[in-house]
Image 1 (cartoon, rainbow, N blue to C red):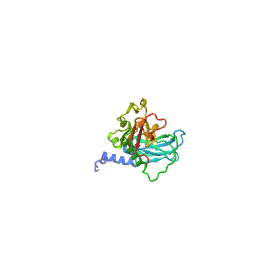
Image 2: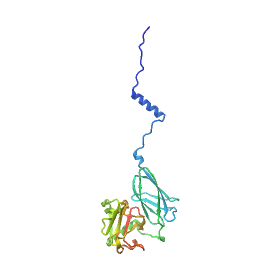
Image 3: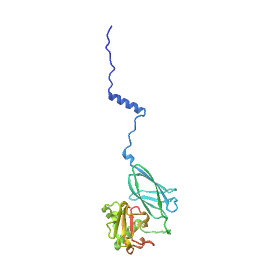
Image 4: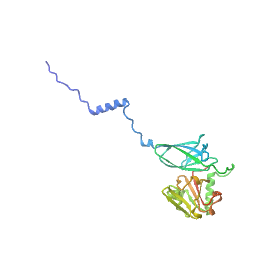
Length: 261
């Protein structure tokens, strides 16, 4: 009988088996999807709710801007607004609404989060009658003219936007602590400004874009979007438009790029 030599099946390379296995698992849907890129996880969303500080009711039609941005958001019929696509970091929000004081908040946004925040606004103590002005400069032009006029008069201490940028400061407190007549009192929570030329080193009143903002403004306010600061270190050098009936100290007046135009 003829003798037939035994034959073994041809060896299959391991890399071919591995590739075939991965192809089979992928076809069965058992291969895990690649992890999302880090850049895809950095964008965050801020969902805000603007309410009346006294009644808790929603404020409809308020304008909310992030200082230094060219974008703005308006509150809807429930007093809510939305900012999306935010990078992690700190943002200064400023809100305006008819019948309410201009209010600022510092908001810190984390990485890849949806943050819900409630923002209260204080009603104005008095209701101003509407004024119609025709053939006059815009608000932004007028306030720049008045800023220069007060600066030329020599009352108070003035800091321009160029000087703020040159100081390379992240907060207004870092800018103000070098102003003669202002004393910075600092602790672990931050710094407060006191007027050394006023009785008992009192605390100043704050105004933002011409509106009282003492309750919502501190020296920790970021400098982003700020184009000018006026410092009046006593009542005697404070202009009438930056004085309140119960004011006992000087005033710090802040002008922003996002103010009314």
